[in-house]
Length: 202
Image 1 (cartoon, rainbow, N blue to C red):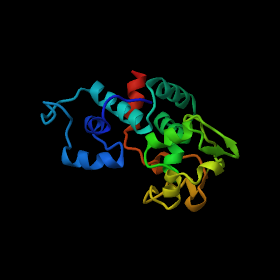
Image 2: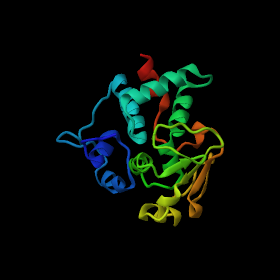
Image 3: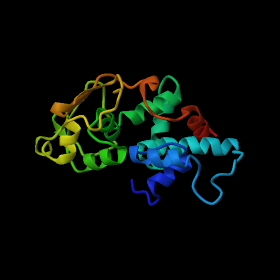
Image 4: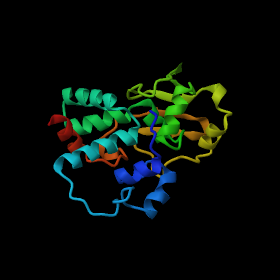
């Protein structure tokens, strides 16, 4: 999804670092961008819910329509709607590629998927929104394995300090498996999903 606004400014506006590179900018200026960014603002309930929704969207790099569809499906399922929503988003192929350590950011993961670098259960998939099921195996296509980004990934350059429990990755072989459906407590996303539910339920 194309965004005209620089990621560092978006990170400061949302209050979270969207990429590792943005972290140092955010730490240096941990306040919203703009002339009045340093001022303390009293946010309304609506603004707080809107901010959480925007944070969730930004961390998965999805459009508003995609988030709405995911929310509608989460609301139909048993259990807490917020937990269901984050779990559904986490099962997107681009999100899994990033969690497995094949890509440094969600933006790079999306580009790699669109460029047809991945196989799911032996079949090539080029849709970032493709939803994985427990037991699905994702691997880098044989012809793509020699490309520099995947050589770095195989060396563990982008592996998280703690891989979520639902992801089993063998980076030297560039292969990963979704072991189980993601649980909210294991998903490393900064968001109060209950506020997102309240935003869409208003």
